[in-house]
Length: 267
Ligand code: KIV
Ligand code: NA
Image 1: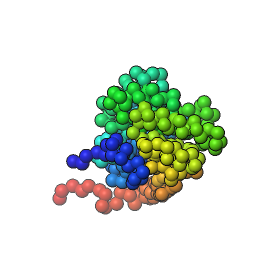
Image 2: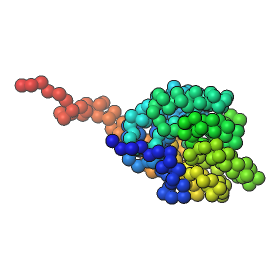
Image 3: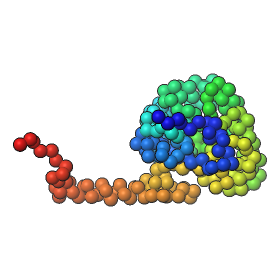
Image 4: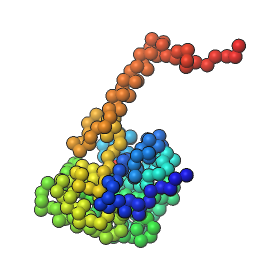
């Protein structure tokens, strides 16, 4: 029985060994990733990646809890953080606290993540001062897709850099133990990572961050199209296509099941 990586372990990795983070939604995938990752995020990207939704906006607390329970069952070592879905925390610090505690109590996860910078700082402070560890998420925040008019990279315009840096500092000062920087230009990622004393975990935010996260299905090659920042480390989608094609041919020509895959009566 191994001790799980804690929020203070992650905090201690600032400026040291890069933090290895990946998304996980299911027990078997969590089991495979747990051997290699410091942090597993049950991202609300599950709505798009596993449920085929167009955005993350329809994802519910119950969906996050179901996937969170599966990931907790499948992992032993990594810190598990669960995304608070759209509409479950923005209304008030009290609403956020109620839903965060619900997610933590029903899953046993260590931390929650929520999107937003300066405007969410009072909520982050309310949570962290009451026992809820918070992972921040700034830059491209997918739950803002409809007000942003799409998934748009941030910081191409240098005039906005001080705002994003202020978001990072606000999240840190409110007590977050780390912060995801998503979809921002490299010099801005470097600037925010240098300005903060908590680790930054980048996705589409360059190697200047203290750690990296990717959607596991994207890096494994499940998706047909992935954003520019994703490196495909495998082509699992192609492997599945070939394997299933092989199975279909063998069923149709009756070569599967063969003698090794069949039960016989005692003689
Ligand atoms: O939902 C998600 O998967 C995320 C990460 C990619 C940071 O928020
Ligand atoms: Na997310």
